[in-house]
Length: 184
Image (cartoon, rainbow, N blue to C red; front, side):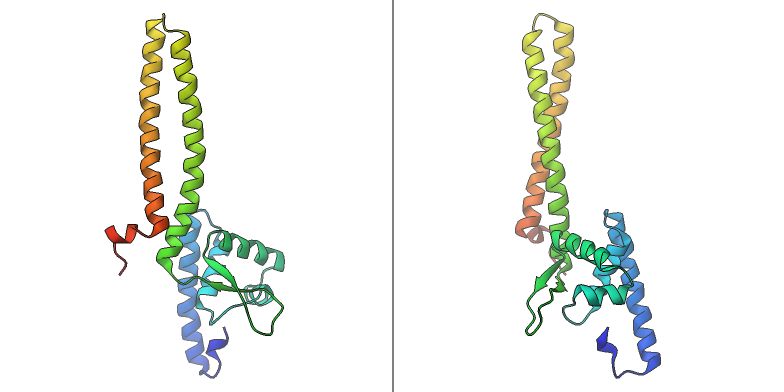
């Protein structure tokens, strides 16, 4: 972290300890959401870095292989938590944190929830169609039709929940969520 040049050794040590505590906390927090601790630490390091960094710089600073760095960077880019930026006079790819934590939260959960909702909605709609077909095929068997009707109602309630969740995802994606819960 080149922003510490010119400071006294005891100042550097205190700043590094404070930053490392935050970086570790970020890593642990991201681990709760399914992102590996090392990728969380990578994001934390990049958050405190003063400007864009290359994979080589990240690799040497973090003590990880360039391949691991590349995987971590790709994961963070997919989650829209970092972005590739242009750097005058360099051929190497540069990466920089998107410093808006609110937007990072919104993007992360939007991406993860949308993927889950789409998969679940496909499964629910397929099952609902099958149950409705079974009801039609066995309309003369009241016990079976009652059982299928109960399942149909449960699936329809689940579909209503996922439609609501899609509205929440859209509010996150568009930023409308902040009209209801303002940023500080």
